[in-house]
Length: 327
Image (cartoon, rainbow, N blue to C red; front, top):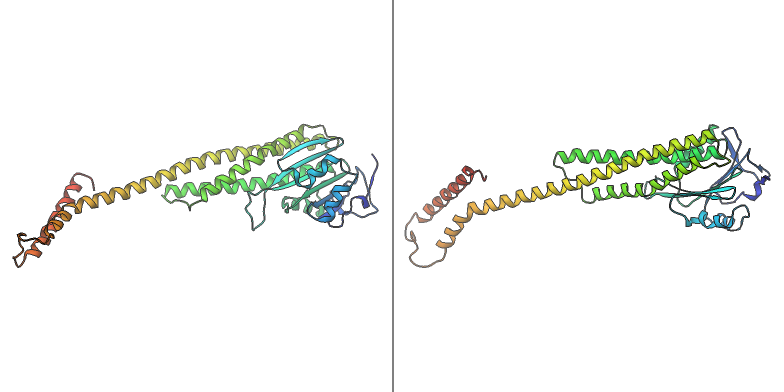
């Protein structure tokens, strides 16, 4: 396979364009560089930038059916063989401080043994781990190693987020034991994040498993084994998500029951209070009709006697309710 000149892939507004040195390091790509399977290049683009969009639409280095996929048409994780190359769509945790982590970021990759073209719109923080390794000279040496390292970093970030969700669920369960209800919408958001993670991480695990089983000429057996380990690790994370979803369903039932019991206790208390004051309400209404012949109307201490009678009556009803174990 012929080599590629650096000038053919050096896009002015690229996020970065690097040439792998084959020893775990990388340097910025120059126009005079020769790109081959011993020294592949990594071109990382934001497909919304004008020069990057123009290069994706016109370069002869990419198959025609890959252009739309790299420009944002593909969202769900998948892998497709395109002749000598492979098109991969992956999802990663959104680590931006102003957005929710469950709003996953899509990254699209087309790669062969000479060239890696990755595109995105929002920043993929998991790539920083691979970039730092390349700067320190401990990164991938070839395209297969690059793909394994990227998938490993994506899975690490997903596992950390799943662990954070798991810790939140444990805190909620402890609070429920103390009869503390979470704020409105908190549990719903938590369940939504779990469901979104399961929706996209399930096909992503299948992508890893397929990459581990495919006989790609730019991946060796050790890299396939590592890819299978990554797929298994993500599978364990999916099992954790399933258990968390089941636990949130139990918590939703428990919260509904706690709120129903609280409402029932308040209704019961109000009913007892109405029962305690019902006789006194009847008597005060009867003696307040302002008609002639009211008993004690001419008696000097009639009002005081009536109040004492009401207190005794209320105390008697309360004592009866307590003796009947209603209070």
